[in-house]
Every structure is written in structure tokens, then in C-alpha cells.
Image (cartoon, rainbow, N blue to C red; front, side, top):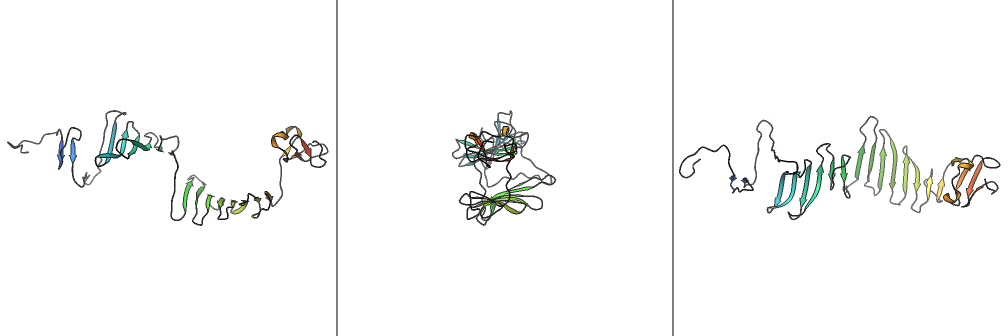
Length: 260
């Protein structure tokens, strides 16, 4: 290297170096140009950013007009952080990855599960938007939660072979619960509930037999607590097992209206 007076050997270490740019005390290496290339040739290549202590920062800063907009690295801890800024002064923590277990926190510190999000999440699609949950174990099932492209919000649970359960909101605003591939329960837009029928005509419409829980008199819940109109089957009622109803203060036998 010619220093203007004589040729000198290149030093083993440079105090600072500028490539088409001027280095300074803060930026000991400065490179100006459209791109930089670090080539591993026929083998691997890595770029290392080291810090002295855990509380220091080892990071890559992305700037606009020499003002920071995003920073990625070990920022004040040994976990991986990504933070962003609108002005280079105020920073928002966007993502953190725990160095021990790989758990990820979006807008928060990582928690006990693989991913935790502070705030709302949104899935968008020009067709059907779904979130798919899969149990990859032997005999595991799948769960689909989403909005199909036929204007229905849906909750699906699929088994390995057939549909186990589907509940969705149709354009008529009714809700349906499926089991084993067939509709089992429907809630109509007016609030009528049908069990075994798709056309409920009363607040509760059951197409089939109904079985109530059996109680001993001593085990009946408080008639005042359950309220007037509640039914129960009493196996040791006076005069034989039978249905009883609450009038709001006591249990009365369906057969004659006398106390159980």
C-alpha cells in the first residue's frame, strides 16, 4: 500500500476501513454501494455478531434515511427479538423467541405454549379462510375453524374417516350441530331449538323420547334455586316413582299436585 511517500505492507488489523465510504469511530467498517456479497465458495458461510454480556445487544439494524425502522437480534437478553419503530426513537416489541424452548410471543414475552399472541389475529382469503388444527399422533383428529366460501361461518371437527361434528351459521342465521355426518341439533333464527328435527316449532322441540335425571327426595335440589317450572323424576316420591315440578318454593308431584 502506497501512503504517498513509500510502499508499506498491509497491516494485520485496520483501525477502521471504508469501502467507497468514510469509516468513523462508531462505524469502523463502512461500505457504500448497491450490494455486499459474503460468499462461502464451495462450502458454508456464516456472519457472526457477538456481544460482551447478556444485557448488551447483538443485532442487525434496518434504517430509512439513517433512521432506525427495524432491529433484529439479541436485544438486552439472550432471546431473539424483533422490534420496529416509526421514527427511530420509539420502539415496539413485535416478536420474541425464547432461546431455551423456541416458544414465540407476538406482542408479548413467550409463554408456556409454542405460540402466544397479545391482541387479535386475522386470517384472510379470497375464497375460504380456515385455521386447521391437527393432532399428528396415532389416530389423531383434525379441527377446522373458518369461513367457507358459501357465506357461512363454520366450526368443523373431522376424524380420520368421517365427519364427527360440524356447527355453522347459514345465510338464514340458523345454527346446526352435526354428529356422525348427520344433523342432530338446530337452533333457528328465532331461538327455537330442535333436537332430532330441523324444523323446531317451539322453544324446545324434541323428536324422540326425553329422559330426565332420577333423584331421591333427599337429593332434590332446592326448589327455590332451580325456580318454578323445573321438572325432575323422583324415584321415591310418595305414591310411587313419578315426575315432580317446582313451584318456586317446593317440589310437587305431577300426578296429584301434592308435595313429594
